[in-house]
Length: 166
Image (cartoon, rainbow, N blue to C red):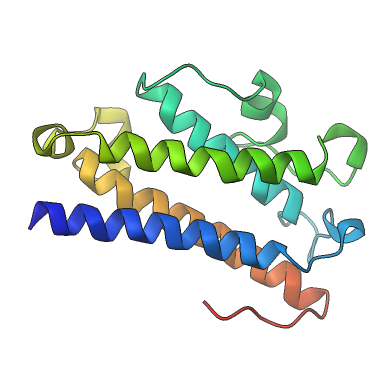
């Protein structure tokens, strides 16, 4: 059962990333900073935040050191960062998407390399909101991405772009 649950969680992570990338495909470049309402996350922030999150997970659990610039983890895309409407503060969307696309494979590979015992190990106390075990973290990561994919859907709809089927 544990293997089947992990397989389902990893498939959900891959599906969520594919959905995110499809949602980005036809947002015009000049609209990447569009905020549907004041204070809302724009597409560039969402993509950078998801890349940051994958990099953060890998670094937080000592899988490998962070690869993204420190500013991505703090001012630009980290937890608590505030989206800016100024394009000059961000890297280009192509770079952000490239980083995003590569990092998910690393996260999936990390989980795939874990033994059943490692997957069943309890998460550290400061991670308990994500679930009790590393296996549960897989689902939490997929849910986190899905939450932000919903924000991209709102950006698209506010720009008059047709929805993308799941």
